Structure formats: structure tokens, C-alpha cells
Image (cartoon, rainbow, N blue to C red; front, side, top):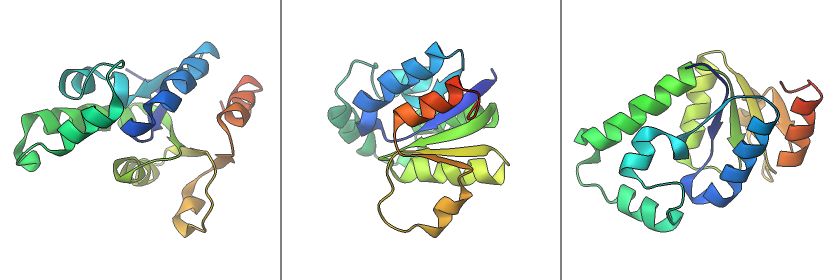
Length: 147
């Protein structure tokens, strides 16, 4: 399924992610959110679950490199990234989200950073667009700039 956006962030940022993707969709754009994926719901928890507990359980999977659960989440997310026109990194973001940025950059995807980056990060020059807040980004896609 093609998407306008692939949202990358951290699962523990769920309370910020879910309202943000809802507002993106209200503009008529499609967005893939890892929290909602069938694999994530099956193995990490529903969108209503408490993020810290879900992540602690996920991070404690023994032999995660050979886990079919982890493999399914990985493959689902990578396919959605390939099927997306652009990637949004919503800060704060963890290691996996930053790795997804690198994959998206390598695939030639448009990269959008949303959130305040306080320290100098040379690799953040990969981003085509930078917005300090979710509202700034939403205004841009409503006005056709970020869409």
C-alpha cells in the first residue's frame, strides 16, 4: 500500500504520535505508523497499551535476532518505508527511528524533521525540511508546502 508519509519516532512517544498522525490524516494525507501496524499490535500491544510496559517486554525478548516476532515487525516496517514517499522523524526519537532515517535517505526518500533538535548534528543535514513543532508541519501540508 502506498503512503504519503512514514512516521518514525519512538514507541514511548506514543501519546504524541497518535494525535499527530490523526491530524495528518485529516489533511487527506496517508501515513504509516508503526504503532498501528498489524505486526506491532500483535507483538507489542494495542494502541491503547501503556508504552513503557510494552517496550520493556519487547526489549527483553531473548535471542531477538532469531525471533520470528521481531523479524515480522522489521519486515512490515521496511516494506512500509519502501512504499512511502517521505519519512517524518518526530522527536524525540530512538535508535531504530534514526536507522530508518538512514534507510530512507539511501532510498532517496524526502526527509522531514519535526521537533526541536538542540545539539549540532551534522547528519541531520539529510533532512529536506525541518519544522520546530507538529503544528508548523501541519500548516505546511495544509498549504501545499510539505505535501
